[in-house]
Length: 265
Image (cartoon, rainbow, N blue to C red; front, side, top):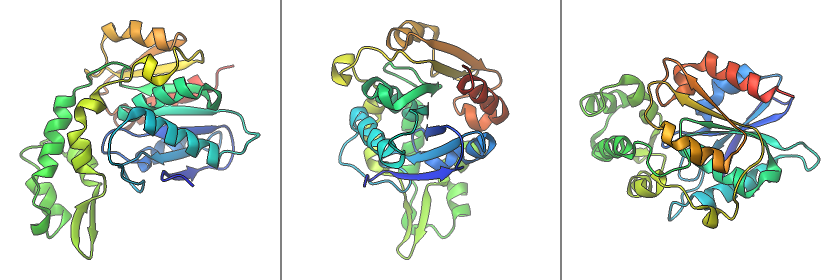
């Protein structure tokens, strides 16, 4: 079996696979998956170095895509239809690589607030992960104390809450469940995107929904030609009053857009 941890929500309908962003985990999409049931069943994936999935020695989008593809093949009945794939941020880049490399596995692709280009506000995540790395875990006595210690460097309580979901308490004390050191050191690679030569494919000729947050700067109009070169059947949707975390900031709009896109003939 794969070292990729998954959770299935719903038993009926076409399968939708969700890939989270940096320092996220599959359960970030739980409410979205429940809103899609019973019309769709959802597979929530913990990407490598996140959640319950195994850690790796290096970060590589192609390796991640191949591992997730193998997992999809393992947990999907051989006679089933190809799955729909939804990826946000880091997970969006992994989803694009997967679709390009294994198009036979994917029916429709949804890419949320990220582009197949270098960049993507890596400076923001460098600040966030540096702030987490500076937290003195050995002296922590509660999650509330951790939240208070991060209030100055990470002012937004929603962002702090999102990051602190990864703080784990065991008999040895507090620790980060994701591979914080590797992810922080790999930010340049996370912000990059493999070439078509590395991926081994030129394009994915299935329907693609490209969702952007109106208040996010992770996607620009200059990315559209590259996106359409790789994914010629791309439709761009900009979600009003949403930043980078579109699915958590505007969940009803997100679910409605998914249902409309996945349900088209």
